[in-house]
Image 1 (tube, rainbow, N blue to C red):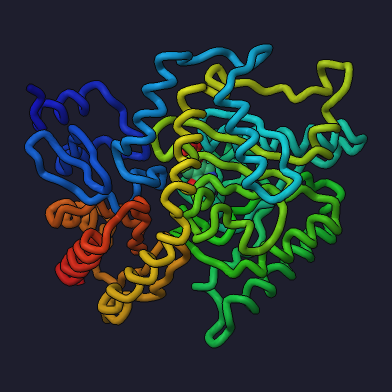
Image 2 (image 1 turned 180 degrees about the horizontal axis):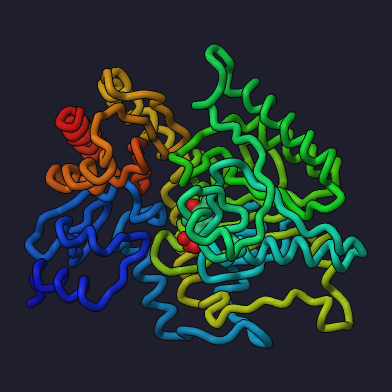
Length: 438
Ligand SMILES: *Cc1c(COP(=O)(O)O)cnc(C)c1O
């Protein structure tokens, strides 16, 4: 039987782990996971960890969800995969139809990728190619918000504003413009999130006024900039951004890879601003956190600009596993659970409960900017430790929690199946961790 120590030793020898300085693992052990159930992950000795970050924001209904398991198992007996160029299959058709019904009206065409970053690539390419096909080939630039994150392939990095990446890979990336982020943590004293959002939108207006002739699209993470440290902002920004993009003939790309699928309280974050983007990106939670899949939804206007006799006017992009049937079935089972369990309603009650029991966290002397949108909570912790995130992670494990702070920002983004008892445990153990670190 595999043991914890054996597995982590073999992993360090053969596996290059993502987003990791491997040398750190000389002192910080990897966490071997043998199995998962609900919000819990278990190692080989039965020690458990509450997955407060939904395994990098992908899991929705817990680990090993019986209905998703059953859907994938059923599909395995029928068709594991077929190429999507020249061929089609039932799960991808059903999923595309279901998504079209759920998304803002008019996003009727689904293009599939394998992960979030490729969805970003697809949207950027499709936008610029649309302008080229429409006789405006000079519209090739993109705009993103300060501290944006849209993935880590080279194209996606060109609209990602993270200093660490920019320093390491800047020479490989075409620089695009960033505009002010409406993150309310940086509003003036006494300024409401809404008026701050509108002030930031004025910055976007100014930029578009000057540069719109060369701009293909604005890409945003609606309502929450995840990798920026769960930076939350008022939907008024999205409403204004939509108006401005329409006025200046620029596409609006809504990257809902992290915030879609109910995370912000509505199925899609865009609903809260009552807008329809030109491109809507989904990934992460779309398969309930089971299998890699992403989708770019777009309008008939954009689809029609590619519809012609010439190959070169068609959209030139493919991935081997585009529209994989197993992943599509996992996504369909995930959408079914939203209906069967009335998930959005249940989540509202859970969020209210967590906000009530989190009062001691909110009142903690070292805690700043306690904030919540839907099923995401975040706050900054004032601590004298420069390696706060690392210490908090390690200490969290000792308290049975998978906490993964970003800098001094601690956040909860738990699977939706978390119970009241599990929320109590998550909050009280986090308080203990913070008390030990401050
Ligand atoms: C995670 C994420 C991506 C990238 O998705 P990957 O599957 O990791 O490539 C893009 N945009 C946002 C907003 C994300 O949170």
